Image (cartoon, rainbow, N blue to C red):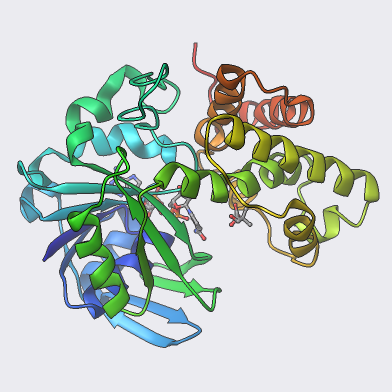
Length: 327
Ligand SMILES: NC(=O)C1=CN([C@@H]2O[C@H](COP(=O)(O)OP(=O)(O)OC[C@H]3O[C@@H](n4cnc5c(N)ncnc54)[C@H](OP(=O)(O)O)[C@@H]3O)[C@@H](O)[C@H]2O)C=CC1
Ligand SMILES: CC(C)(CO)C(=O)C(=O)O
């Protein structure tokens, strides 16, 4: 199976390595020092189950040509650039899986009901992804794997279990998602296919949405920040609001909020969006924070704690020049 990973950073570098270990014909689209290092010396992943290396092909979409599947693993602000470049990788039967955090651009496509087909211009401005990729090629994706690029071409993975969940926007059974999941499983990552990808998206998102804005405001990891009972209470309320939004949208997320906040409070982990702020990288404010609250308004759910935290976090991202509120 020919699979190209578009955006071989932390997650993409890990996924590409697992796909190669699983026997796929893997290529990557990368840039800068990361691209040069992968081209010269391959990818090297240091994980709980060992040290893994792979030598994927590295090239531009035109050089790599039509694929059986493309896995997009950029940060959300880079999606318009993906839309511009992805064309040569796509044939009529190419599946394109967006394996990222946050509300995906296709969220209301093949959704059914009154909101079916609703656009999310903060994530897909001018419908560029819709036109370049098309909903028919698109698979949703969620990834549980804490990954960091430690130096170009080298990725450290924290989790003992690393999961990728894939699913069709219309909730149908998916042989094409299963084919990708099978390769991941062979490569030592857990690949799963779901018929309810939106619930999988929200199950992950409730943590990003409740934890991320507080991280930006405190500039601390969850552990140190939640030592203050006021913060812990507010973060708990924020996560309860996020779960209420998911439920109102028809996604039965099962998050045990008290347990999740307790887990976060034992961790020194700095939210990835705070790491982006500190490193001056474009921030996923739209897909992780603002669009979920747009969905809260559509669902008629009040989210006062999240509203304030997200408004202030957005101001921080604006002030740092790492996010621009859509005009
Ligand atoms: N890292 C983690 O532990 C986790 C991340 N996620 C999610 O996964 C997604 C990816 O995150 P992550 O892997 O951390 O991000 P990274 O920034 O590490 O990786 C994205 C990569 O894509 C590259 N890229 C962006 N645009 C282009 C382009 N036009 N052409 C070629 N390469 C490009 C980036 O290059 P450059 O650096 O030059 O911008 C970078 O190397 C996000 O949605 C994130 O929230 C989910 C779970 C955990
Ligand atoms: C929120 C959390 C801890 C889990 O999804 C995360 O990985 C992040 O955003 O850094």
